[in-house]
Image (cartoon, rainbow, N blue to C red):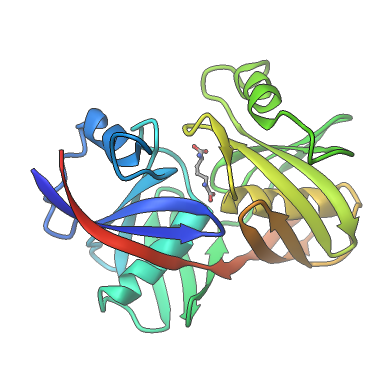
Length: 259
Ligand SMILES: N[C@@H](CCC[C@H](N)C(=O)O)C(=O)O
């Protein structure tokens, strides 16, 4: 089968996009998904995203990690998919779409995409780290030396270790620069390596830093290896609501591939 694909990136978290409104894509072909994402034998990406029709909303997001498996929510992928939907003429400025974790609102202006994330009712605070789910599971750990940390080695040990085991987690290492600015590097489950940025990851970091009292602000800038993202939110009782992930999403190139 020959597929027309589009390549997008959001602060360096990159995705292959396929317009699957005609249901042309064989979702059971894990080998093909892996090949599309392979940086040597395929196009190369952290994940594959299919844009599909939805009965009541503008479109549906189907997300696969680069290991070929369908996974939980991808924040940067969601932002890139909104840009793709605009490129395809499906939406103009405001949209509502369905993802694996439920309905999302989004707004696109030029190449800036604001994506509303699901509410976060529980944050688990431990002595050494914080664990929370922002659509995907995230372990958040403060560190002092972000530059020299071996993200792949330490991230992988945490991802496969107790209590996460097989189901795993994404792992974020954080340095506080100020009340409103944190630097983050993320080990991503399903990519099994560091990615240049993770949208659900920086969302988790912003909420975690607020929950443990590292900041009292509700608009936080997050410096990733691939660029800057912003997260805004409200806290009502112990629940985080009205959470928005904000940043650029860009089309890089288009092509055709046989797989
Ligand atoms: N890149 C992502 C997160 C994608 C999901 C993750 N790899 C997982 O399986 O949990 C993002 O931008 O949120």
